Image (cartoon, rainbow, N blue to C red):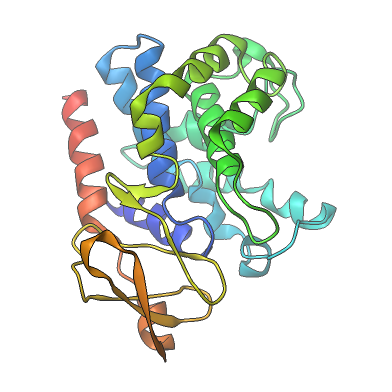
Length: 269
């Protein structure tokens, strides 16, 4: 569980990416299944997808949480995260399950990706799958400098990059998922059946754990504004208070992590 908890903690450092790891893991599972892969391989890819950004633990907060587009120097720093993540996996029992996704998810078929500029079939299948799903989630998610794209527009971009940024065969399979009803329950969600909520004051994601109930308090990770969960799935209610200490002491969603680990490790037995 330690690697999964660490990955969740890394994600929590960026106030705009709440739910990203869950979404990429779910999307990667859908794509792996659409590719007809055996259950054991699907489980490996799902685990790698959840851990793919592990190396961002080594990226400074000033870069990771920047509210405008990165400049060339900052982008060069971001590009170090796959190798950092790979080094963190060294010697870990789960390394063989996740290392392709962690190290190579930013490689592209045209050789213009990083960290090594691999091409086509030189890129492992897991990395090609996670790369598509990671990019799709980035496109459909809101950032401080832009709104998330509609699903259809993101699919058009993927179609235009087939054989270049994205594996052609896998990309076509992913585009075919647009008709899959589950896709709409992944985009814009942080867990199964839990839509993303945003801070009404400054915009970042306020993640709601599955165990949270009506009336429970949640906090914006950026401005530390306090909210309570409204009844009947009506979102969040601002209390007008701020609590920096509680906002910074957010606990990992052990329920989400436990389900993901249990479901996928069981398939590997």
